[in-house]
Image 1: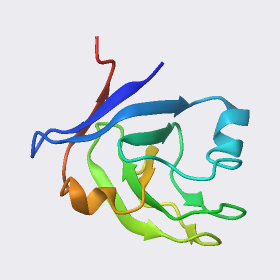
Image 2: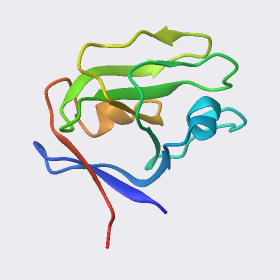
Image 3: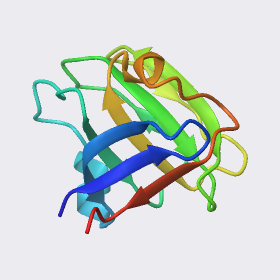
Length: 118
């Protein structure tokens, strides 16, 4: 099932093809094995409060969200072989194609809603 991530403060769609990784194995694998993310694609890892890009082949943008969807951390173009330590209050992470955060003007403090498009 693909979800939509929307910035409630700007009204902009962050990603319109968001997959969910909520089981232990899905969270552990994440984007490993992928060669890229297209613009509009994302992976919502929940629960999750920090990520790494070890063994990845491409950079990503990362949003850490609290339980109510407020952005508590935002990283643009996180390169492979990096780690982003957990941030206080982070409950889930949305991984996006590199550069997407700048395109959709999303930053710390913004409210993000991840929902079923139906």
